[in-house]
Image (cartoon, rainbow, N blue to C red; front, side, top):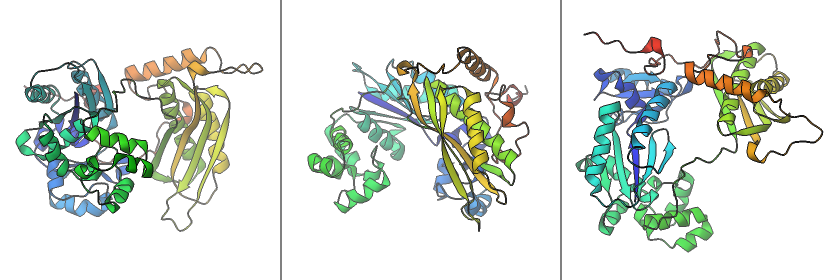
Length: 417
């Protein structure tokens, strides 16, 4: 038996934690540079505010309905996610953090009534974090996802859904659009619709072997999971990423080289930090810069850079990324976006050193460990490369960002008694 615990409207709910005056009111959260609406509270959804739409297009509607608007506050979201996951680990030793707001739990050998158990989880998370969650129970991970969908859509379930019987499974699947099934994207949905497969039940009762030949083995496994046959085990240790990218749009367009170099240095540092988290070493970088696609003179260039040896040294990765950016830069343009990607890497465990090259210096590991340790303890960018700049006027726009209530001492809420 699997459980899926999913935070409701996670980003918007995080913004309401320390703003109880906004509970029960419409809230939206914007993407980087305040460009798009990426999260909406239930009340905002009820106003038919579309998701992933340009903020400037819906700004009049938001003002009309007095919708609270926030810029993305990733330190707050990440910290609240960690708190929820820490609570959930107490209910099962076997867990999989699927995303920032979702976690699978394996409930092997649990024979008790799961509905009260789900309510206990739901109430405790609300009590300790003030985040609303829904809980779904199913015999497979895909059915746990289906149950969680039902818990959100059916008010009578009070946020907890347990698929116990086959008639319950059939009832839910018949009312669930096929694109809501875990792993079914819009492209596959269109092709399934052409085959008259419109609901999750249509997919569950389809010819799995025929669909496997037309699509892939993954779709065949999804069908098996919808019918109660477990094909996917928990991934307690997330697989290492094959590529690591850090890209951002500028808050203010860059019309000269220095701000682009600062941005590239920062993005390289972020990518190197993620690289060290999964114990890999970079061998090849991809660097790009571009103007807005809506500019009359659109300019976009990229290049691939081979590093001198496998490394996770922020200094080396940043230096080569900066060299690449200088070669791409052309005067006379207003640049809107840049990025650094680590597109080839090797696992430290399987690294084979070159007999004729010394490779990464021995003291680099200690230095990078010190860098990461200080930034984890005292906050990101406590230590950084000088090349990243100080004022960062080009940094992404966050005009509506809330305080970092849980990760910065100066932002701690003050309670007057």
